[in-house]
Amino acid sequence: IESKLPQVKTTIFATMSTLAQKHQAINLGQGFPDFSCDSSLIEYVNQAMLAGHNQYPPMTGVPALRQAIAEKVLNLYHAKYDVDTEITVTAGATQAIMTSILACVHPGDEVIVIEPAYDSYIPTIELAGGIPVLVGMKLENAQFSIDWDLLATKINPKTRLILINSPHNPTGMSLTSNDFEMLANLIRNTKILLISDEVYEHMVFDGKAHLSIASHPELAQRSFIISSFGKTYHVTGWKVGYVLAPKALTTEFRKVHQFNVFTVNTPMQLGIANYMQNAEHHLNLPHFYQAKRDYFRHALADSRFQLLPVSGTYFQCVDYSAISDESEINFATWLTQEIGVAAIPVSAFYREQTQNRLVRFCFAKQEKTLDAALERLLKI
Ligand code: PMP
Ligand code: GLN
Image 1 (spheres, rainbow, N blue to C red):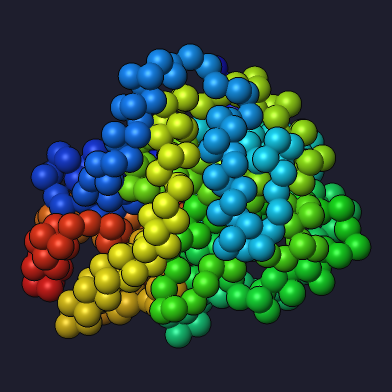
Image 2: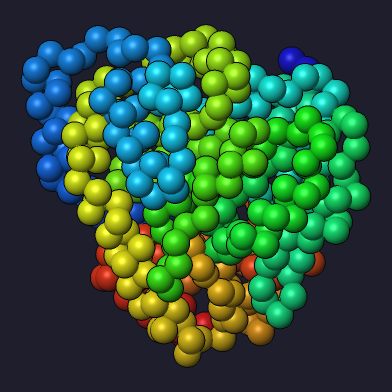
């Protein structure tokens, strides 16, 4: 058949995990924890199933979960989202991203994507008939940042949407209030909408608070804000997330959502709603992951890799140019096959080839996994 996505191959995360398995490499590639979630979370889900909550929930999500999300967002970001009309539970962030894009991008609309970008964004825009307009981040002194002047040159009357992601996968950078002001100035007198991918909102380090678009009323008014319980509660396989958006945007979102998945599994939603009652479960996360980040970075400081700063996420990007001049995909493949540690080439987050020499490691792992990987990486 004539492909709708001729440029798309199997996602790098599946590819590298398969390669890691084949070579029995330690998998620091695909982003997922190798430890279990809290047993109480599993018990809550079990209780929900045993109590008979196994049929369709409401299309918009279980009310108790939407309520818990509203309370969290109010407490952390001082933003009020209406439980019934402005919060929708989704099958992970991936579905929320796709549904938001399908809901607002018309054929021929331009959508600004800041690269490196999570790999689902561009194919999803193309499926909607939109035109991805790519804006590369600046990489100076091993530090990524957004070039707002460059982004400004891409805005025109066809621009429908801008996607942002903070904390950012794969770079680990986070947007600042200055970035928000630049963005607000750029779109103030336009009809441009925003998707703010905040799946790593609870992984922000060094005592800083996550800056959510929800806390910026002017931007929030035109934004779909997306998060994922997979990241926050160490259950990436459950695929439960949510989208916050003002009523008019939520109305359009739900028109698509109801025919996309219709609903998201009931017992997980109820279990998560129960678990969220204790805010410590997400408030402890920065501390938990910062310890892992510091442990991993400290050990890698003695290696030949150059470490990029990580202000958030559970990813560490490293520059390997002191070790090899191979392309990122070749280097990541070699690392997996020959060294026994899988990583993700950062080129997977770009549509065009770059000259960078970067790979991404996921440090959401038990100490013994990190130790085993470090032993191999320090030998290179
Ligand atoms: N956005 C980003 C930036 C991600 O890193 C991920 C997954 N790691 C997702 C979206 C998708 O999240 P989910 O697994 O909840 O679909
Ligand atoms: N988002 C995760 C990552 O960046 C992986 C998700 C996936 O496998 N699609 O590693």
